[in-house]
Image (cartoon, rainbow over all chains, first blue to last red; front, top):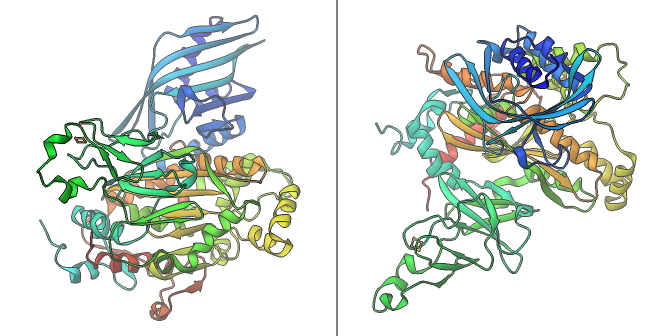
Length: 154
Length: 439
Ligand code: FES
Ligand SMILES: [Fe+2]
């Protein structure tokens, strides 16, 4: 999987298949998952809050929580579907690449379904075993509006 | 179907000494009456003065179904008006916030108003000569909210003409706001970092009850706390924790911890949970911050301020305060089965950046739509909202530690797991709901 665009598609597929451990393994040790509260307008995760800003420790916590049978909100379980537009490479260097991928994201649970849209921006670094995520940033179209619970990973 | 509107006796009968009827959470008619009465008769949190620092700055906000406009005046005062043009009712501004300059100009026919709502001008003036416009309401400019209180920059409104004064209504629970503001060595807070907004499909009272519910964390939050404990295993209790761990792990405390933290109720539904200590008590202290606090307040008072870190203080019916970590939740009912919950973070002037980081981190972990802790709460609220439709038992139990004598005093201090804190909210509900609104 040398083409980073294939990596992006793979990453989303792991989430939709609920292979969360495999998904987490794609992150670099210093990797972050970030959903800014201002969407694309936000400069950094420190001066303004975020819907989520998580390092590997917190992502791990989420993944472990989802495995616990007493994760009440997962009765019934949530399922996701990422519908990705083709990724565009924004910046490329010898051992890193930045891509943007517009998407629709559907999360379904019981009779309810939520639909989110936006652009995922990946910062990937090349490692001996392949690409790894330094940052996955999700700029939601309506990040600042009131949202219902988002249970899985956009 | 109108059952309750003209029957205060039926409304009052929904709240018994130790239980409440399910209609409180389900009835659309009661929701409409709450908008007309409860949210008009009481003092409701509107916003914070730091949102409108300059003259002409405004914030729009709906309270009890009324579109309102909070505006900074040229003389520095904060006014609240109805966001409704005096001509035909157009909302003067539809952005959430902004600056209108020196006057408001209605987008429809260009009537203009001063920042305090007084009429300024209108086109085709001659056309109004000889008419009764000036004498009638439409000629008076924007309707103003008469009862506005800016308390240490927290802005509250009472929409009804008659009702208790701000101080009489809140009484000693205002100490919770004082404590939060006093945590700034300069006595000043500013809203920062944006507001996290959640739509929860449950009745607003259920959410407010849960703010005082100390028996649920062990069972409700087991998945999150067990995951956190497993990841933190092997660390000594004294090891410095990442902020997220410092904030999540205490949710797993046992029943005894929550019972001993203590609670206090005040007249009109207000309460403080965690009068002795709370899940926020053991955040790492910062020597330079303590020094700044001591310089500002003196050693003894600084210690008192910093040691007081209740779990939640409820300023009934719409505001919940966490002095440490400098966060508030605002409860904004949308329908009988739909509630908007906002989580705001504050910067404390003169305090280190870490405090603000703590507020944002806490809100993100616990109150974001992508929270790792709240998913289980929200799921259960939504589950209750469905479950209450079941027949058979029409009552919600609030019996825990009920004591028939508890209504004798306005302020009662008790154990932390006592459902008195919830009973107290419902007694206030019944009181406010059976008084007719006057405006
Ligand atoms: S409605 Fe505002 S000017 Fe006509
Ligand atoms: Fe909870």
